[in-house]
Image 1 (cartoon, rainbow, N blue to C red):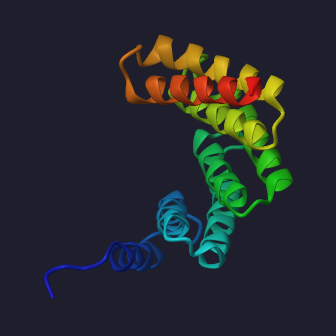
Image 2 (image 1 turned 30 degrees about the vertical axis):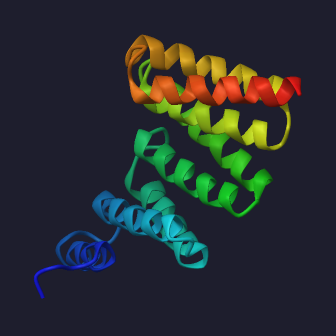
Length: 170
């Protein structure tokens, strides 16, 4: 068979990492995150959660406390929880990811803006429009400075922000 599914490829990569690398190597966490992200996109939440959790545990062991990759794992799990309506758990993870990214990355890094954007959507979903607006504006400022006005992320956040304002005013 010439064509393999993404799931098969991720599983194969994880198995190779388990054989070739030390037990808690960050590459294994990355592979687990990738497979979990695929499962999340497919709506297989029960399969995704333990993989995200395992990746976070590996990163806790393998990486310094404020390493940006640790924030990525937290952000990914937060997104899963958001998808499942576990809003309080998602909020805590988004906030942890934001704190790490504030410390670990340059001031106007796009990854920080991504977490701010996720927080904005989170608060919008909870209809806490004042907080949502604040996070949208912070994300927009960073994206405009770091990626420019024409970048798809900048435009998408601007669009989400405008939609939120319309929702808020109706």
